[in-house]
Length: 163
Image 1 (cartoon, rainbow, N blue to C red):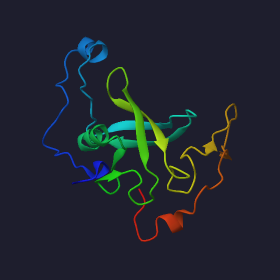
Image 2 (image 1 turned 180 degrees about the vertical axis):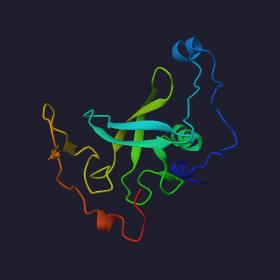
Image 3 (image 1 turned 90 degrees about the vertical axis):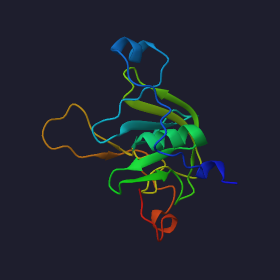
Image 4 (image 1 turned 90 degrees about the horizontal axis):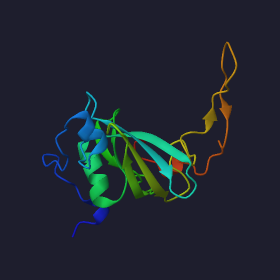
């Protein structure tokens, strides 16, 4: 039997409703995500316990279906043009606790239980480890916040391509 996290949903079967009127999309119960011209929807992943933003990635229809079917986060890599399960290389799996869609159904928010020490391929807990200072004019220098590495990315991703 195929482990639940390895289930591959055929990409030719869509569980998504056909998009209706604006009122139906914004006020109805039909799940009809609006994919962009590249067939993608933006997904924000936050830590279910702390609420911290861990990462922003993209999902195509198959990644969205896989996430729903398995309860683990699946994404679509724009650079590799490939479906990938978060944690397949690092072991830092994201178990989805809740999934929400925004008002016009063109963005997904998942609350996850992050396994392992981090979500970022740079070795940090979150991909959002630098702040942009506000109220300044001219050149901007990023400020590191919570920027300590929580794992060694070279050791974790040895022999594999990072997302």
